[in-house]
Image 1 (cartoon, rainbow, N blue to C red):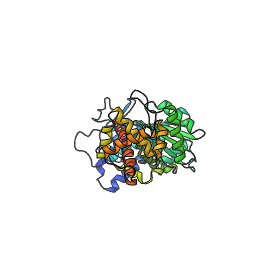
Image 2 (cartoon, one colour; image 1 turned 30 degrees about the vertical axis):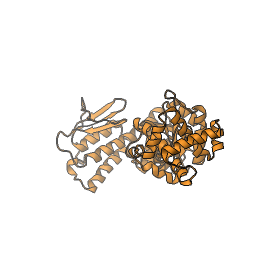
Image 3 (cartoon, rainbow, N blue to C red; image 1 turned 60 degrees about the vertical axis):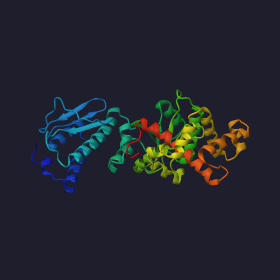
Amino acid sequence: MSNDQLRMSDLGSDSVSVLRIISYFDALGESAANADTIVRSAALLAQCPVAARWAGGSVIGYDALGDPLVEPRPPETTRRDLDVWLDRGGADHPLDSVLLDRLRHTLRVAEAQSAVVRTGSQMGDPALLEVVLSDKERREDRLRAVQLLGLDPAQPVRVLAVSAAAIGPAMELITQTCSGRLVRSVAAGNLTAVLVQDGQDGRALAMDLHAAIAARYPTPLTPDVDRGPWVGVGERMSVYAAPGSWKQARRALRFASSTLYGRRAVAYAPLSSLQLLAELPLERLLNDPDVARLNALATSATGAQEVTTLEAFCAFGSLRRTAAELHVHHSTVAARLAHVEAEMGWDLEQAIDRFMATLVLMIRRMALTSTELAAAEVFGPEA
């Protein structure tokens, strides 16, 4: 161990010590150190065993003297992509979490850079796209990733959040709809993040995607039929603000739906004030009394038909247009709506009640969608 080696025992818990740890790992990143060197350097800094394990199962570990560990002891909890941990065997250092955070960050950047060297390609590497989309990465690291991906840093990008049972067909459909535009994608938990560099309006792109999805996966659906992809469309932003577009896309995804009059692809910006609904936790949506009453009504075949008729009426605004769309007599529509009014306590001839019905239907669609996404562990605390 060299005399100028930084040690955690030399550091306190103040901001200067935090900056020294960050600078230590920044220097490793700038030197293009490989994963072995990075983990060994982390162990020398920590003065205790440090190890890293990738999703594929490969493990690197070093002890406090910089010698390889034969059998690194794994942590009790694991991450999806990359685990890093240290083993003090005693009291933790106040800045151990900072060390581990910077170690993980530096390993990810090194992995992305080495992938480009291994493949000889500068296009489409998922690790690079992770760096572009993460709001925890440094600006200079995102700049490097942007360059390696072949993106034009002078052109804005947008990010799509895609939920699909089969991502292959979904990506094929998205690529065809975004024909002629630069498309990159990476798995993000149970979602797929898709980065698009184009000049199209977000609302128009969402409409094109909805039409393409609805044509390939028409409603009504049965439980054993693939619903097709749901897509949230973020706004166009600078490549350096791509994490913001990714967050918007995930929020817009909560408004997607495969109900007969729902939208399969939803753009964030046109939601306007409705974006506030995305702040509501799933429990609030499910416990809304009006949503609960509509759900109860829809449990029977007749009730489900009545709820669909209400959706159509709110979408088209008149009995005759609704009847034409549903291929029934307008008196049938009137009878179905009358039963819904009785159950819900609404008078759909009143503007405020029509607004209420439209709002409750939207919240219900959000509740159904959010329930499925939550079951798939899509959304974390920051979604």
